[in-house]
Length: 415
Image (cartoon, rainbow, N blue to C red; front, side, top):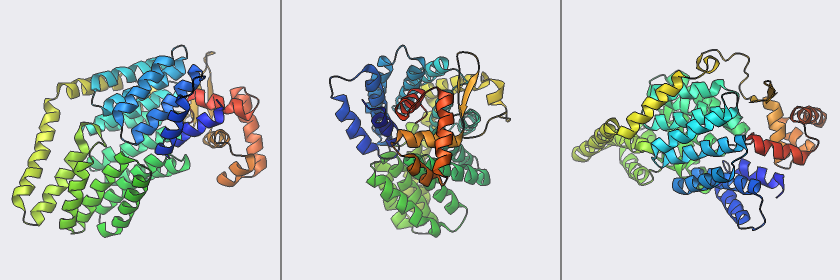
């Protein structure tokens, strides 16, 4: 199967998940696929299914991919980490942590895949309301060299956690950085998520009416792309902004719609968020009995988390893992690392590093763009693209665009 087509699907799962899923599943029906092609198509399907909120199906796709990836340690590690993420969204927490830990063990801490695992563990901790611990994992992920989409996700959830911890100024910076990184690498799912969270935080800080149009824009775009988790979260944000703007009746209607959508986050954090502001909106309308029910739902969900043995076990294991991270990851100093760089360990003990610009050019090649197309997109000259691409070829030891695309797929650079 042409590597360019596989690369387009891997890139497309965060931008056009419905179309990517259709393409990947159509290709999976072919009888003459190699094991390598089948793994990549299953990965593309799994990523698209996650963006569409179909978590059980995503877990099944990743489980098949992991089973076929044995013998390629890097690819198996990537599939195990992906599987851990899907299992976490299915509330299978002990299995999720085991898969993430196995992926880290296979990849090692010098790989960008470790950053992906730390990001995903942090997302699940955020859903458990362990905001301080979640923030620790996201900051660790950001200190590791990794693909821009991974850093975008880590910045997004760092911003979310900081918002809950009351550190609004820092949260705004992280969320703005997440939106910018996601836009640059065409990770539409994360860009829309960051825009939604930014709108809500800005509304809380004043002038909520100014954020209503942004919320509606994100809802419409996520609905058009079939990104149900983003739509769910943004419906909640929109209702909250309506309440802050004084439109309590409409806010209550949107809140009910958001509750009906809640498959966006493990452990029901969206439900808790909606009930939190919905209780205030109902009370402002004088509907005190309904407001009491919403407030009671918040307390019940929080108590359920505290009682959950699975949640306690997960957070205990997460604390232990964070304490065992290498010093250069756990430290506030990320020596020698430029955000956006991609680095992998080599068997010789050295490391291969691609700059953020190298990655942008390599992704353009993987999408089938010409040097002229890439130059126009990055606002640099075609000669610069050609020269930098030649240097990339030397670094990764390939001789043409097809081989470079295959290398990018194998190394997870297109995540």
